[in-house]
Length: 497
Image (cartoon, rainbow, N blue to C red; front, side, top):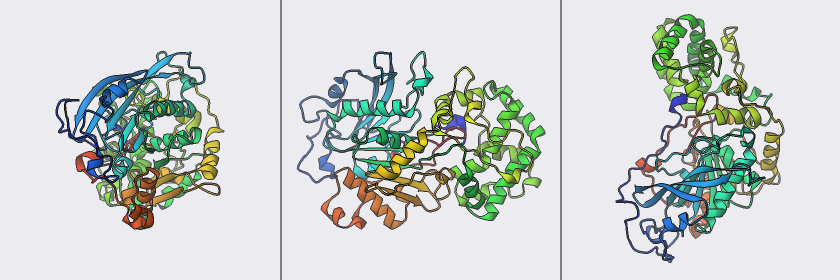
């Protein structure tokens, strides 16, 4: 949910201060220094200690090519292409180029494998686990998100097993260069992706940190979402948000005229969803969900207090600010065709009732099939998510799931049970879809940080004896680590680093 043409908001920006790529020289990494100390990092060296520049070692991997190296203070940063099979079960049946970014700290550091589940950002950034362990970060673009799409595209090869195999090949290729421990992470669909990777390749990673990852086990049973929306936040805030949404349907005719004028002026079209009316209602029906996904309870005063007394423009602007009228245009949907395809074939999607709307809805919460061009066949497989859910409940090992208390996507979440080992599900109080370890209550924050450090092999003896001493090894940097609530397609779990 949210503004479909704003999904790729940068969640953590890096302002590079390094000079020309590859030109920096410094002391060799001090391998005798304590883990996590600045002396233990060789990030600013051109030489990784083998006598060969790290870029040359990376590009020596068969199928790896350089798109760009960008200057980043304290790191080497590479944007790469890697040749992947379209079908890992039948590698001879064609290949495609998949984008990767690599934030290189040092070959003596642990490595974090980040996935957004969508496009990869080529702006250097650092996920929370990478900050905690002060490590390298490999980020992978999800298959079929352009430009990482085969041409022609065989959509039957877009599934969670094939995507996990993409990650496995990248890991196998880079593990020879980065031999220390590896952690998988990602937020929302990226958290789902990290979980599926662990399911299919449980021996690759030393730990998994999955943020705000939905787990839609039975696609036709979504009552947990309705129960959540009936109790989230406060009664006053819920009623305020619901009133604006209802008023947008009451005033459908004049507000759709505004929508049509906007679409005409911007050249937006509605071929995929069918009509402007269907697109308008889809945006309006997202409003309540999107508010709680991206906003905090303290933001309720930004919503018109008296919806019935508000002007048409105030209602229109509020819907646009929270849901985004570009979301269900052809132009807004195009980038996210791979997501909607997966939601309609394997992942599942929410279907909520919203009883406060009465009989004002004409279409209900529309399914993913409505948001994918009809030229692409789709068939839902109801067995995929239950199998993954069962595996996580009984076989999770070194896995941490973090959710936000006020995030609708947490209504259907992963759980760990009998048979799991050293695995946890924590909830950040008052948090939305941007929940992270830093926002957990103190004891859980210490536990989560300690386990991440331990899984990465960089926990000190003091932390191993007393989890309350666990702290991120790299200091927080506003330009490097600042995170905002992630955005994703409507209705879809979003991106997080």
